[in-house]
Image (tube, rainbow, N blue to C red; front, side, top):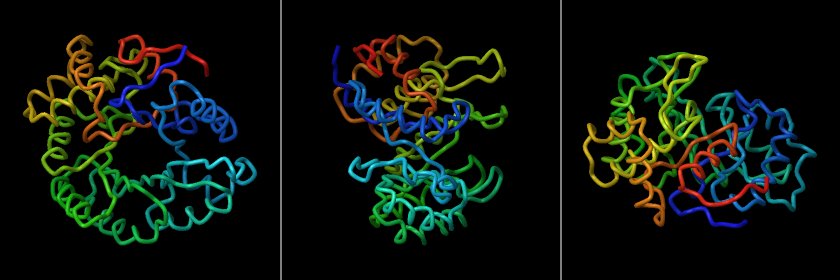
Length: 289
């Protein structure tokens, strides 16, 4: 059975198979990514995310045919200043980095110096279409969003990225906190990306950890509402909802249009979010991967 992924969901899920909790080996992740890219659900799938440490260690060498035209997202786990060095390994391996993602500050730190340093490096990130600056939800955030929006207005392909989960409860922003961030990006015309914790479509309690996770369809519905001018309180309501029906209705109304504001998220599994989308009726299709 064949189908086309709706425009609203195009490129929603980056392939983070090599990252926890999946932690696939790079050869296995590449093999699975190729299957996804050749499947009926290819439209849902963004680039394979690869840590800069693996790239700089030459781990892609010999795994990619230059004629393949592999596109990845480079995750700057070795820091901002090391990004150009990691990128220098890609062309010889026959690989292109569509995007670069890097944390600019630790939790509790002022993110402005890191953003300033990242913006100084942008001209050295050859061929990169988007630079995602991962920001902690901390003091100074609104000023940093202003700085990113100003840089975009000057033609710099920079966006914001936020963490929505992790190994500690404090890494999960509340619906009100995430709603405020989404609306702040909306007000500045600033696209954003999310990472971690978005394991299921609908907000839920993980019985193993006791953490309540955001749902990616909650985020989708909330972002659509925000883009339509909804206030923070309404956006927070959608993020907090556990009944899928109003969330699906919000998403269904926008299926034919490109997704506003929210660039997407990384998942160590492509099939899990795809299964949820099929179950909710937002994608129609059958598995071939």
